Every structure is written in structure tokens, then in C-alpha cells.
Image 1 (tube, helix red, strand yellow):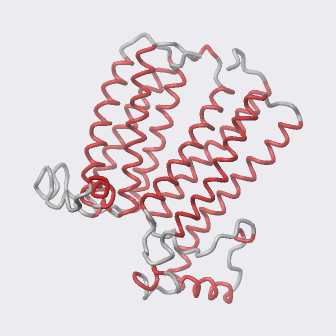
Image 2 (image 1 turned 180 degrees about the horizontal axis):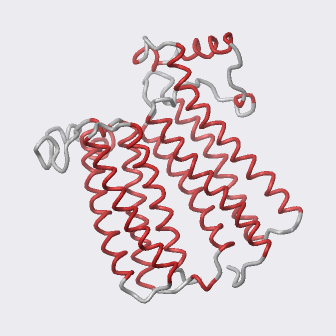
Image 3 (image 1 turned 90 degrees about the horizontal axis):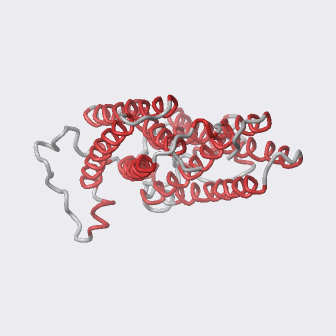
Length: 342
């Protein structure tokens, strides 16, 4: 990392920051696409021509007829009208279009900075890694959609979770590179134990997010809508319905919701206590602000998680819950950087 921030660091940093924000935004759009049950409205994948939406009535009739051949229509949405189809289509189309826009915003500035020799060899390698993850993400996205276009009208929860994990990896790399360009050494204060605690917090946050993706993919949030008990029981009836522990944990909606609840509560307790402990140490102002942000976000996250649950998972509350989770993860990653040993 540079000791001093130069003008070209700022331009690179701003580009990376915008990319980071765009990836954060597409994670939210992807979450909304799932929450609005729009992810299976586009039945083909055309990386280039797919950027052109239906332009007239005939186009809409064509794509609607394609949708009518899918298991989702035949099993779940036989009474859907074309006006309702347009609603779910635009969500999925927006998700795919925004992904293309991110790709364009990555490629052209990257070529510009490369030609201007503004990129170090190390940064070039890291950005190429980001590019390959992005291409892989597109392939994983279509692989995920295909899981709901054969016999089962539902997207595979395993593939959806993998799609989210890959997006978080991209977000992680971009955010870290952004901080390397825009933050000088003066912002960092080394506290070895704090770094360890924060790293554990990040892992717990990530596990909670992944478990939440299984809740979203299987609609497990609607199985029980009481808190803290589930229908008056700590461990609800039906928690174990499969002999295989792995299958039961990831395919039994009651177990999926139960596990997410208590993973989230444990994560909340851990992050809150460890962050308050770090705040008790002698740290600089930016580190304090980041720690306060973490405590605030983890508290808001739990509150909105409970509100989402007891209100039977309305889209707006569930979306806020997902958005806050990703923002909390970014805040933890920022704090890790601020306590790093670089």
C-alpha cells in the first residue's frame, strides 16, 4: 500500500469505489429479483442480444409464450396475465442489464489505465482475477436459472447461494483494492488481537449471510413467523425430517429457518461484544467511527430480521434486511483493513 495518496491513486480509487458500489447495488437487485420471484421470467441467456428488451406487442407475446413453457408457469403461475409477467420480467431484465453495465464500466477504464501505465503489475493481476470472477459469475447465474427451467419450478438453493458467494468475493476484492488506493498508512493502527477478532466476525457474518440465502431461496422465512420461539417451541416440531444431516440442514425449511435464526443471534452477540471491546482500546477516529457503524448495523440487522420474520417476509423489509447484511459485511472488512499489519 502507498504511504501517500497521489492524484492517480485518487482516480483509480474513485473508479474502484464506483465499481464496488455497483457490485453492492447488483447484490441488492439480485435479492429483490429473488424476493419478487422474478428470476425465472427470462428463459434464455443471450449475453449480447439479451440486452435488448421486448420493444412491441409482438415481442412481449413471444417472450410470454416462452415463459408459458416453463415449470414455473405450468405449475405455479397458470393464471398470470401478461401485465403481471411484465412486472417480473423487468426485475430480471434489470438485474441482467445492470450486470452488463458493470462489465462495461470495468473493461473500458481498465484499458484506459492500462494504456496510460497507471496500473502496477500487482494491481493488473488482481483486476484480471476480478474479471474472471465476473465472467464466472455470469455463467453461474445462468446455471442457477437453468435449475428452475427443467422440471422443478424453483431455483436450486445451492446454486443461488453459490451465486451470492461469488458476488461477495468480487465485492470483497474490489472494496479492498479501493481502500488500498484511497487510504494511507496514517489511517491504520495495528492491534493484533483486534484483527483476529474482526476476522472471526467476518467469517461469522459471511456464514450468516449464506444461511440467509438458503432461507430466501426456499422461502423458509414463511414456515414460522413467531420470535423467539417457533410456534411456542424452542426446537420446533419438524426440525428433523431427513435422516441425512446435510440434507436436513439445507432442504428442510424448518431447519433452515431455525439454523439461520440462531446463527444470526450468535453472530450478533459475538460482533457486538468484540467490537465494544475494541472500542475500549486506544484507537484512532476512523477506527472508532467504523466500530460504531458496525454496532449500529448489527443492531439494525437483527431488528429488521425479526420484523421481516413476524410480518411474514414482506419484500421491503426483507430487502432492507439483505441490504444491511451486505453493508455490515463491508464495514467489518473495512475495520479489518484499518487494523491490518500492512
